[in-house]
Image (cartoon, rainbow, N blue to C red; front, top):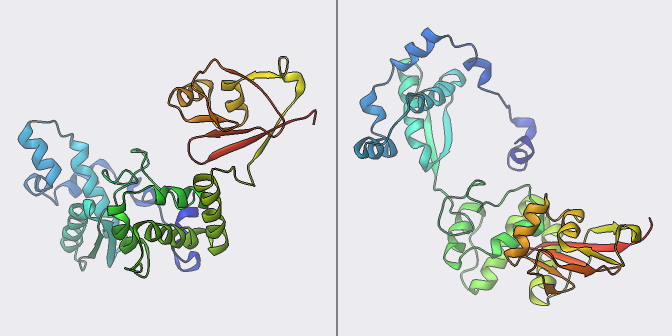
Length: 291
């Protein structure tokens, strides 16, 4: 997490703390005393709690404790401002109430709109598989940003860039400008330009990138110069397991020598320099050598 944070915040001017430092010291009577500071009626004002209560869906007591513990963090830190997504505004209001009860000036809430993921529908999150990580390689960031729906380009730009995009740009050029700006922010202009060039080569001109990772395959490991596609994918590091490799093949996500492979049982003649491709942006070049 720190590796990601330092891409946004100044390391020398930032102090990182863990709430275990104070939460682990709370005794049971401390938790009860904290719980007395807020009412169930106010907790049920939270939209998802209200809906679930009306629908008769179960709500665990621990779910009521979560906003209280998060609010207690602000009390301990004596925070002046808390930044959050709009889905956390309720928890921040709990913090304000606890601070006021304990004689502190309530914090200011600085809430930002939630960003939809690359699917253009659900909130961006790793669990939904629609996230763009700021520590991902520039090629991944560039490619994923180009895959978002056109309708989201302006929202992404308004939330991620310091300056608005040129309104005269076409939808395609605007998305490329967005991708280059974001990749530059986290990896530098040179890496962003290389990512753009690789994207053009792979997806526009249908070429394999020049700097494809190479995987050495010894002739002794081959049977009459052939090998199963599943084993090759795993050996090349393009899938973590044989089961995942089979699923990728069935999904039509695997190509060898520019041809799509659809049969997990397929065996290929392994040639020196042969390129395997999995998904849109993952490649490996096979080198047949004793070394």
